[in-house]
Amino acid sequence: MAGNNPTSSEYIQHHLQNMTFGLHPENGLGLAHSPQEAQEMGFWALHLDTMGWSIGLGILFLWLFRMVAKTATTGVPSGMQNFVEMMVEFVDNSVRETFHGKSKLIAPLSLTIFCWVFLMNLMDLVPVDFLPMLAQKIGAWFGADPAHVYFKVVPTTDVNATLGMSLSVFALIIFYSIREKGFSGFVAELTLHPFNASNPLVQVLLIPVNFLLEAVTLLAKPVSLALRLFGNLYAGELIFILIAMVGLWQLPLHFAWATFHILIITLQAFIFMMLTIVYLSMATEKH
Amino acid sequence: MNLNLTLIGQAIAFAVFVWFCMKFVWPPVMQALQERQKKIADGLDAASRATRDLELAEEQAAEQLKESKEQAAEIIEQAHKRANQMIEEARDNARLEGERMIESARGEIEQETQRAKEELRAQVATLAIQGAERILDSSIDEAKHRELVDKLAAEL
Image 1 (cartoon, rainbow over the protein chains, first blue to last red):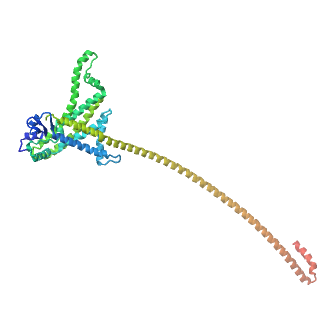
Image 2 (cartoon, rainbow over the protein chains, first blue to last red; image 1 turned 60 degrees about the horizontal axis):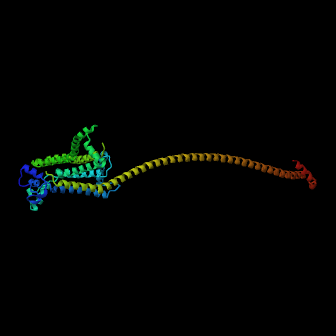
């Protein structure tokens, strides 16, 4: 457990706080020493743990796949190549089934999303105290108060990470919509559906209603995409933390929850990928 | 749980990863996959072609076998015929030869008989003369009666 005998709620809060680096109005540039300070740093602060783990895992994924891609042979594939090809084919099939346009981006995008999100989710299976305690030890070694060293291991339990990805997808949705339908087509889609009338006056009246509905539909896509992943993993992480507080009984409980969580980890990565493909195919299809 | 710069950092990292994946990971793997697909398709093609070739060859072989069997049968037939012919010829030859030999033997026998007769005649004449000589006790002039007895002997 963290610090000097913290209460349950302190323990949970400690686990759910990111290592935030930013400019504090009073303490200047540095790591936040409490959730309060992190809050006060405002927008221009960086979650070092989220960034570190997500970039590290992204590089791990790309390094692994790049290594195989460089030595890919057309002969009988060996173990690692087999695995990579299986993933690539799986993603390629998913994209082919759903996305009917032509795009060089969608398939690699989907592969990156699936593997990256899966790896980030996978960090959830590392025992909840293991890496944070390690970080506290290292922090203490550097002279910091261990109770104020925050370290959150799973990047997808940080809403910034999931929203960062989903907003990128959102940008692509808009880009593809405009590329396929033209700017006027995109605007028409936002304003002339679902209600339209043959009378021009009525049509003009209907435009704001349509726009309101369609804008909500459009904006709901990235928000739901981000919050679904974040919510699932955050809840999963929270349950791991709660289980970690029940004493000896945590061992079988951890095992049971981790086993179940494997499903959630894979499923959420797959859902994020699949919905990205679906949204992008919706953006490129004409109505 | 505050929104901050991490959001943008994550978006940038995401974009870079996707770009890298699109540039350096996806194409080589995809290419390898497609090439293998082509190779397998070619292999299957070749296999089916080979099967077809094999069938064709088997058919040809069977046909050739049938043909050669027919030919062999024909040759045997001819050989039989020829053999029969030869036996026939040999038989004819033998018969002719035998007849000829019989003929010549007959001639020889005839000749022998003739000669024996001739000899016999001569001896008969001599014997007759000797007998008559004995009977007549040299009263007969040999030279004188010789001609007579020879004439007699010639009538034998």
